[in-house]
Image 1 (tube, one colour):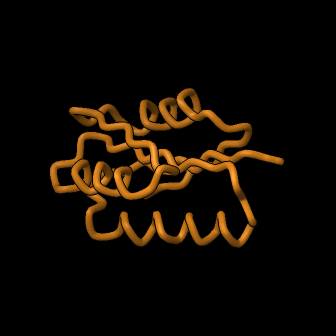
Image 2 (cartoon, rainbow, N blue to C red):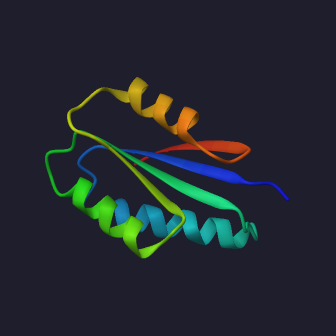
Length: 95
């Protein structure tokens, strides 16, 4: 059985984040994945994205939040996704 990490880098995504997460969950179900995680990396958003990520993580155990206190750039977010993933395969998706 393969395990998958879906990494999503977020910056001011409060208007779209929940839909993106639901799409990833639907994809995982379509692929019949049992072992997967969704890593949501907030890169210093100035809107409600960090709070929304925490709320989503409380609702679904597949979601792993990573919150940057300030904007560190896309490279730091991608590193977080790849180095903090716990699954065999990693897919990076922009928020």
